[in-house]
Length: 83
Image (cartoon, rainbow, N blue to C red; front, side, top):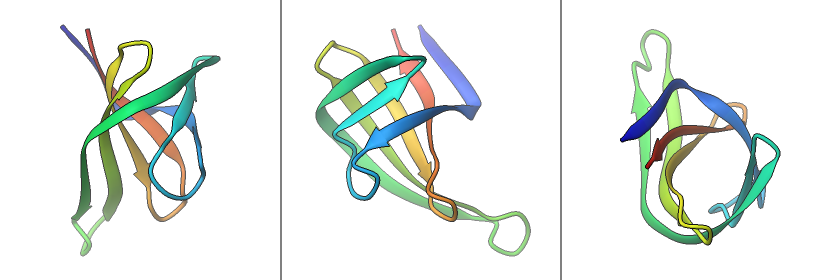
């Protein structure tokens, strides 16, 4: 089963710049064990642009998630949690 937040759920990521090493979501900190995939999306630049860096990763506690960073403002979000 998968939980999806289409608009993203806000998270804090360390380090602020570069690939994530840990993130805090809903008051819990998760250490990144492995980044399994990284991709960049730049869509609809002629309308409402979407410009994001996505990371599919596993945590040391066993979570598999997709997180992304909104590149224009630097904010991070959790988008998908795999059960």
